[in-house]
Image 1 (tube, rainbow, N blue to C red):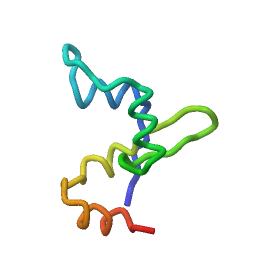
Image 2: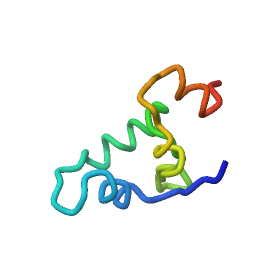
Image 3: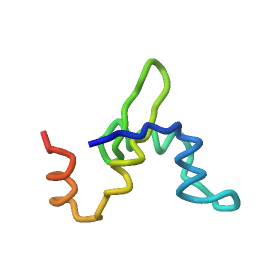
Image 4: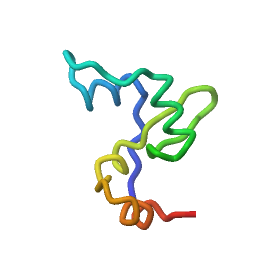
Length: 70
């Protein structure tokens, strides 16, 4: 599967748009740490895997299988 890593600011723009009220960057980083959002830390920066997020179904079991649950 291809990965498309995007910065948190780009993730906020894509999900909530220009005029929306996005979740703060700290909350997004916390979700990345807890594996609630797909992504990774490279150096000190956090990135969201947009390709994996786009495949997110909302069903915890199906999502675990799609991301290869540990």
